[in-house]
Image (cartoon, rainbow, N blue to C red; front, side, top):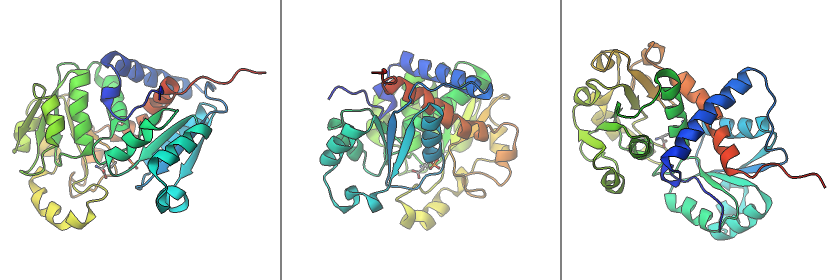
Length: 306
Ligand code: CP
Ligand code: NVA
């Protein structure tokens, strides 16, 4: 199949990623100026959600509508995917009717298998392994506030999860140093670490990771699908809370990001999202603009009139 997919940040070149960030910023300005821009008129995005979502669903659905197209929400509960129809068959059929498909799922192999049988672009809306769309928004937010992230120090505090894995790929693609502070046994998967050995350092002490950092990011301690581990994780991750005192160890102009949803009192202190160093609300909004840039990049332009 010849369609271009976005399952990982590694599916784009560094130049393409920078282009997407720049375009996301432009599309944000157009929207703020009230300019109608509908290059995806009559185009339809299918959105398969096997896990819950607020931001990802809203940003893709609103984004498609704003670009002149439409989005269809598909839950495994009411499609044949949930009743055991093979992923390959679903991909063949869906991609004959849709112009792109976004999937939020558990095993990353579901995405790869769907993409292998899809005629149209497939976008990773989060898997157990990666969350590349989140990183588009995170990078756009840093660029808007501080310019290039090349050569900067980024600290990831907490679980070596899907968002952390995408930070590892971002460290390669955007050329920054990533320090990950996590408890033993909760490191990112070795395959992601191996591909970025020269960009990533693992430490145990969050203060060591944050020292002099230009960007600090964290995420929930229990990701979707790990709910039965919650009590154990709450105890283990306690020393990894990001709070104002920890941010004080970072560079004076540090930015704080959280992909949300946040659990105040757990991975962040009650007051952290109110701290002037936090730009988490801009980051959440940028999901919309960054993904509109991605949709414009991946989806064919509008049909011609007969
Ligand atoms: N950050 C993020 O992906 O949020 P949702 O789970 O609400 O989509
Ligand atoms: N790591 C989290 C991210 C949610 C956006 C999860 O997978 O649940």
